[in-house]
Image (cartoon, rainbow, N blue to C red; front, side, top):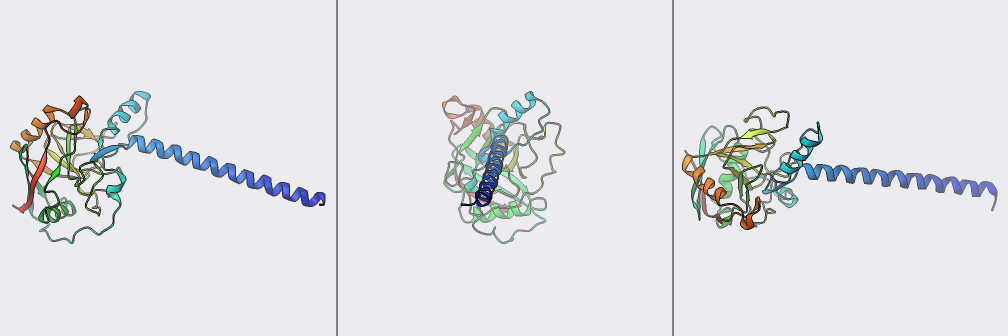
Length: 263
């Protein structure tokens, strides 16, 4: 074989090796970025409660962000794999609606303003009308850093949903985020869980029983009345099974019947 042919093959091999090295470095870089994003955006399935991406001005803030993120309200990926369109719009977009939950711990009700959250309100009415929430459990309670009871998963493990996603709505309702990237979700707020990705809500939602700091990426769509807030506060005060700060509530909450009616 001629030396020129050998040289040509050597150069080709070296070029191939350089390409493979660049591709491997790109894969590793993507993997690192994905791991960082996943760590900062975790939410248990509120469907977990959803994702935090806060600024990294210093190490202390990073540690606080990671701790909060690990407990945020988010569903797992299966919740956001949209397989069907959301229900057709049948509600009155100018009206208010009340969602009533008859639970094993007492009645819980919250008002929904369709003018601010038409897609969310319409979806919840459609799901309630067909009995989607009946017989489901509020699968997650968080008692550290954030204070929420998460419900709406037909599987009861944080991975379930209705088979479609609804768009984010009303995200500016709680004001502008502070330096920590969060806003205060007041006690009594009802909001959608998500995966940290835009428009990834399904059927999981969380009930805030104590003022909670979260990123303004969760659709706030309801407000508990005083008696309902007391019911959720009682569940929160009882704590989590096993004494952890995040997990199944010690006082099990089963939604026996859900209904949405126009006020």
